[in-house]
Amino acid sequence: MPLALQKILDEKKKENSFRELKSNPQSIDFCSNDYLGLARSQELFYAIQRSAERLRPPYNGSTGSRLLSGNSELAEEVEKKLADIFHAPKSLLFNSGYTANLAVLSCLPGRGDTILYDELVHASIRDGARLSLASRFSFRHNDLNDLEEKIKRAKGNIFVAVESIYSMDGDKCPLEELVSLTEKYDVTIILDEAHSTGSYGENGSGLAVQKKLENCIAIRVYTFGKAMGVHGACVAGDDKLINYLINFARPFIYTTAVSPHSLLAIRCAFDFLKGQMGIQSILQEKIKLFLTGFEKMKWDCAKSDSAIQNVIIPGNSNVKELAHFLQHHHFDCRSILSPTVKEGSERIRICLHSFNSDKEINELNHVLSEFQV
Ligand SMILES: Cc1ncc(COP(=O)(O)O)c(C=O)c1O
Image (tube, rainbow, N blue to C red; front, side):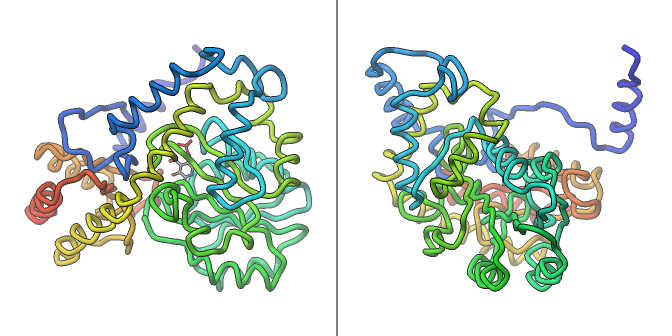
């Protein structure tokens, strides 16, 4: 191979930013996005299995793009259900949140338009914006004054991309204030609810619906691989939005549709959550318990009251050392290195779950207090 792949990989090793695949099945999970324990729920597992056994005719794959052989009554039924949960006229399914964001960002803002995105948005939003012909600029994290300055200078149709809960810092977007600002300037909000789907709102409907702002946020992306414990995503919005995506979104058109098994899993996961809404409050109690101990330690951290917490230790090697220390104590906590986060804000990302016992949370805090930087 003519490319100097090994040399580039060696440089990454030297910079301490080499990525490797790891699994820690014996450790206590403070790492996964399975905030409500649905991915590990036996009850949900068997509910999905039973619904797969009842599927008529039995089918394994979706067999093609939604625009060819991949459409089905089941897909349309699940989209109708999701639209009801997310209080939207329509929804459109995607294979993942990554492709849903690529679709939205790459095809809605066109040449002459402007995308303004929070500097901490997920890579899928950035990648989608790069594929679009619109101009794109970031604004300072959660800084609506900076955003307003950029809106004033923006051209064409203006799109603002934010997350309801940020995937690395775990803090929330000030949605009410953002909506007031964008109404003043006729701006379209693209809201990624990846980390709030399931954990917030009635039936897992997320933060926009919980705050009754759904009618002010035109484009909403929901993902099912985190608190919902399964896989896939959808975009929720009006008829025009969904028809536009069906006609122009390449990540929707040129891929095999979501499999029947995944559709059943999404449907079962929302039915399951509807009958277990108490787990949202259990998760909130676990977060409070963690913060009670954690806040006393005065670690540098991004302020968060969500399931995503973090310990900031600048430097890839320092943060790797803390990750090893925690892993040695059987906690599955992973380091997030630069360039995934900005240099100087390398961190341990701690995810709390409804199934973490109080003892595990207290022990994690105890072990964190013993680490010497
Ligand atoms: C904010 C955000 N959006 C989108 C995604 C992508 O979702 P998926 O994992 O379903 O592709 C993620 C996943 O990490 C995320 O954190």
